[in-house]
Length: 89
Image (cartoon, rainbow, N blue to C red; front, side):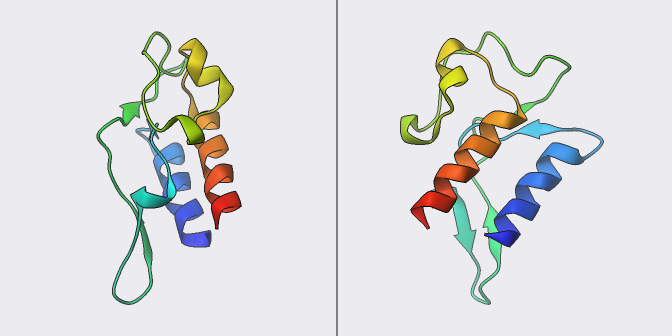
């Protein structure tokens, strides 16, 4: 869980910030030496000042924050998805 959180934090806090938009347990890969890597960046978007408004909801419905259904994405949606991952663990 800690390494997954560090990976998501890296996406959200760099000079170029990203919103993963499809964070789920199956997109967290475990290496042969038991380190976690965030994967599957097919829906990832670059974050601008207002998030990623206007996109149609995409991703896994069980992991999507309620505001995603209204077409609003930001890093808080990834945090919600990460909470669902923790619940699954």
